[in-house]
Amino acid sequence: MIFYIEQIYEEGLDFDVLEPKERFDLDYADIVLTDDVKAKGKLEKSGEMILCQGSLQTKLSANCTRCLQVFSFTVNAKLSVNFVPKVESNRSADDIELSGMDVEQEFYDEGQIDLSSPSRDLILLSLSQVMLCGEDCLGLCSECGANLNDNKCNCKYVGSGDPRLAVLQQLKDKLK
Ligand SMILES: [Zn+2]
Ligand SMILES: [Zn+2]
Image (cartoon, rainbow, N blue to C red; front, side):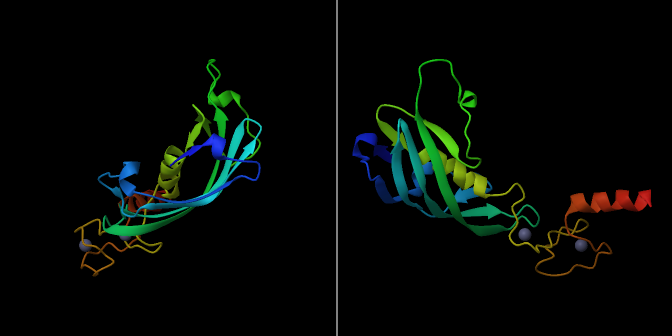
């Protein structure tokens, strides 16, 4: 996903690319990129800065944190990155204050910008810390391990299905 800055003219450069999923190296035990990554948007010059505004679409398969089942997750993210020239000094990215809150900042080098790494970050960020197959996933029974989405087991415990929440509930009950 490399673009040459010399090809970005006054009016900007529109892009619409489909990047093979293998390039993103997103193949973990619990998260796998299953579709190629569609990226489209516009690159514009602003002084030395290159502004990228666009969107990303792809699909992941992930394991539900609650019931451990694999589910498919559609990524539909806003791509908003500012590329600034890489400086040779010790100035770090932290020194450059940005006014826009949700704009990511990257460095560019040798007259080219690469959207791969911000795209990869964005894909990972689109997954929340708690990945659920559905908002109302019932999880596993903390007693017998049955997937409560499929069938109810005969255990006495009836709760949210999340063993950690069950522990919290027990604590709460004690405090009453
Ligand atoms: Zn689930
Ligand atoms: Zn059970």
